[in-house]
Amino acid sequence: MQTLYTLASMEPADLEQQKKIGSNLLNDKLNRSLDLFVVSILYTFRTAQYAETDAMQRASKYLPTAEDLNVSTKIAGNEFLWDVMHNQTFAEKVKEAKLEQYIDAEWIKKLYQQLVQHTEYKKYITAKERETSREKGILQLTWEKLIWENETLQEHFTEELPGWEDDKEMAGMLMENFFKSNSKINFLNLISGEKREYAHNLMHTVLEKEAYCMSLVQPKLINWDAERVALIDLLLLRMGVCEILYFPTIPTKVTINEYIEIAKQYSTPQSGQFVNGVLDNILKDLEKENLIRKQERNRKS
Image (cartoon, rainbow, N blue to C red; front, side, top):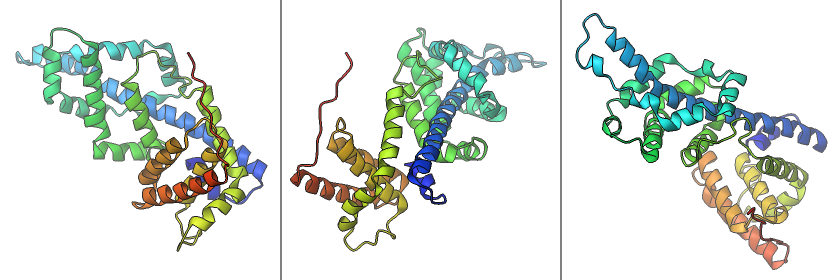
């Protein structure tokens, strides 16, 4: 959607040029989303690892208190954290994209200071056993409550992380999935070849079928002028129609629900309902004309 939006904002070009430019833009966006995802992990991990820095600094005071000499560094040895850190593709990605440059030391310190005040952190450091769910849970809390929901830090990311404002929702989704997965992720190629191919095919199809899709959409814009409908809404309608017609393994219900959610997230407050109504009406017409050809997707064993 973002790639198509960018193309629509550029000087007119012929179809082949649009497809070529679009493919380059799409690859850049996918790669940038991966960079932002890894930076998000780094912020989470560096916050946990700061426990060792805090312990050393407090112990080296001229007159350290008993509390200064007993700072817990348990979270710095978090097993899930180190499983990921020992993942060779993670280390290569951080080095290759020079992602450490985006980690702000002052923010890491602030985040750690907030973390140690949290009730769940105190439960974590006093637990005798290192359970997988607890190891992941404290890192997930650090990400969700201290980083993702921190408006001031999000503003910092927008200013300092290239592409954060456009792609932070993708980074957030990847982080959500990250805490549901194991540590054996390939951080150099997070988007599978199949998904990358689907993204390019959908974009090319939307460009190729623009006239036909608009011929289906236009009659459904009752009391609406197509030129006055939000550009994002029109793009989502074209994408939805293309998925319904030309991507036989994606159920129509899944398509419509997905585009409703994207419209709610990226467009106007009324866009979800608008996209739902138009796509649903177009689907009914296509079904009457027996133009929908769906098939079961072959699942890998």
